[in-house]
Amino acid sequence: MNYKILVHITGKIIMFEGLLMMLSVLVGLIYREKATVSVLIVALAAIALGFLLQLKKPMKKSIRAKEGFVITGLSWLVMSIVGAVPFILSGAIPDFTDAVFETASGFTTTGASIITDLSVIPRCILFWRSFTHWIGGMGILTFVLIFIPSNADEMNIMRAEAPGPSVEKMVPKVRETALTLYAIYTAMTVALMIALAIAGMPIFDSICISFGTAGTGGFGIKGDSIASYSTLCQNIITVGMLLFGVNFSVYYLAIMKKFKDILHSEEVLWYFIIYITASLIVALGSFTKFISFAGLTGGSGYDSFGDALQSAFFQVSSIMTTTGFATCDFNKWPDLPKAVMVSVMFIGACAGSTGGGMKVSRLILYVKQIFREFQNYIHPNSVSSVKLDGKVVNNNTIRTTNVYLMAYMMVFLLSFIIVLFDGFDMVTTFTGVAATMNNIGPGLSVVGPAGSFAGFNHLSKWVFIFDMIAGRLELIPVLIMFAPRTWRKK
Image (cartoon, rainbow, N blue to C red; front, side, top):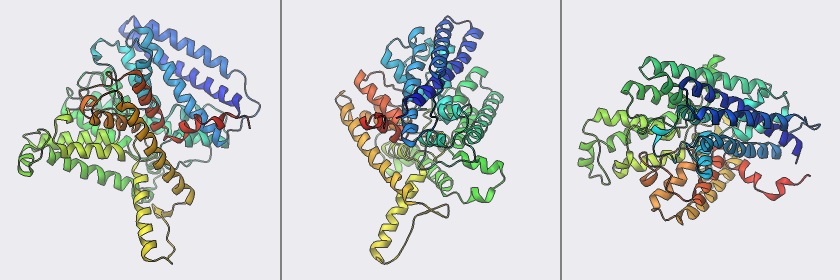
């Protein structure tokens, strides 16, 4: 383990976090809030500490795959702890565990919250809370790579942080790839802010909501999330969530005018097919006349099919992209639409997007592997391969995809068992773990859109914190970080 490069990059992360925190200081100064002092103290301390840690440059700058994973996992944990301090000092969230939970939820773009009354939170803290979504959406390490001298091994960091079964460089140099990603990400975020402001949303709200939409995070700044905004604003957010759930390489291809390559993307095609299908089922399942006709149980719905359709398209977009915004309490829906919502929780968005979940590309690979095995049973002498977008998927990608599924199942089961001891019902516990591991935010029952995670004990919250970070980094970096052999010098 190259400890010097680990300390050096961690220092850069802390310093950048402090610099980014200064934007919240600016917001506090505009609104003349006392909490501004707390944020300023933390920001300056983070900048100073980070500067000191990264001051001594390591002689050996190479970053192996193992070190890339550890740097990524450790940096996200450190970011969550440092980012929690403004909540504590300002008094918004005085408890350390709760503050780390809220911050980890922000950076991992989960959107699960322990805050029960947002109206008492200062605007500079609300801004920082929402801004953590935007920072974590594309990845803080990806951002830092822009400022680190280019090195081929740094692709190991980007692969460890970026979501999906595989990550390739868009352009020859890692730094240029990171810069391209952030340029697209920033442009789309600004466009969303402008669209919401034109639609009548207050400027501060449009900025914070855009951060949450772009990062597919879901922290609202009102107690009812998005419900009190106009239908036009809700529809704009629906489209925004969907677009940020698409693989960002598609937007790069669009810029390069490679439209044929976009049309060949199986993942994007199935992403929209799943979304539209799930939305229509949810709309029918939450329509009063259909509920009565089909004899659905478990809740009530909408008298107008138009309302049911609009709500369904928003909520499925929110949950499938793992954003977590809400315009209604879907806890009150019948069991059928709730079951669909839980299903899309696990599917998630596209690889290479800001969304979480298992990713549509993995689902496609799992289905194709099943069909390949069927074919091999029927025709034992045949030679077949798994293809995605017309290209053969190499065995290493297949192997890592399968390993991810096994690791996911084991971590999910262990987390579920531990949280069960907290005494909540099975639905709350199951969807709570699902909501945090898949970086969604709301689940069902106690942790539904109208609820929160405040009632869980500290052990359960730390399990959720682990699940949020592990889910955002797709498990392997965090699991490697906790392996004792990882920390040996050789």
